[in-house]
Image 1 (cartoon, rainbow, N blue to C red):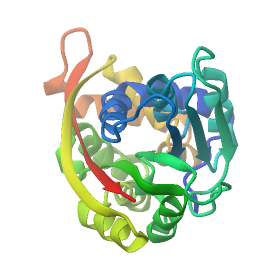
Image 2: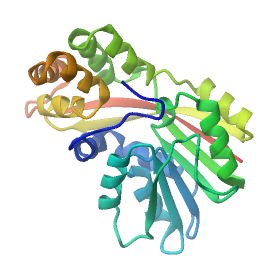
Image 3: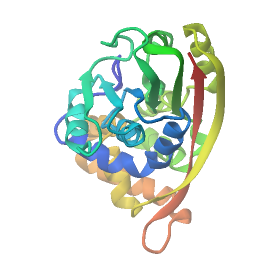
Image 4: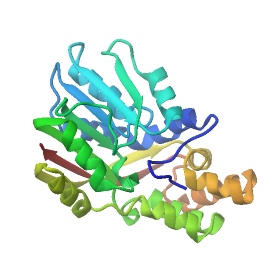
Length: 271
């Protein structure tokens, strides 16, 4: 499943990742960027940037005089990020790099953002030590990680479906990505040299497209869904998508859409 630096997406999966992840993360991107009080001219790093959700939002805040950088270990996601970033904003420089080995000088950033990436870091302490190294004194850090799956009905249903169609190992691998706690983050940030560390849970009601198609599509772009394909084939993935939609039928509107709560932990700190 997830490798030492996240999870790679082959084939057309990076493009589909943007399509099926965007509806869920959009409000969390706004909350993340709001948390660091960006200003025109700021230098910002989007750590484990994926296809660039937070980097694009940051670029809109810092304006033409600002600088925005994004790192991710997966070149496929960064190729999509490069294609998607608006040219009206300052150029966003994307670089393939792991979170615990950043190619930047000390104290080079006014803010470091990490959207749903810290939950995948196998070495959280090492990654946040690197984040501290590249953040200037007085600079801001903000990260979001998903809260426990019980706080998000979609993720709870997805866990149950993964267990049924992918087996316990696949389901538990997914569950580990929802296991970072506020205490994990605040402890690691303090050890890295950050201060004024604060964590809080944030929840948004998010309207998803018709669930049967969306559920299958989203499973196809995450490693746990890919695990189903590898062990049982494409038809099993389609069945899993239908099963996931069925588990949420009582929350589904007549047109197939569903508005569901999603919860994350937002943690901020000062260097």
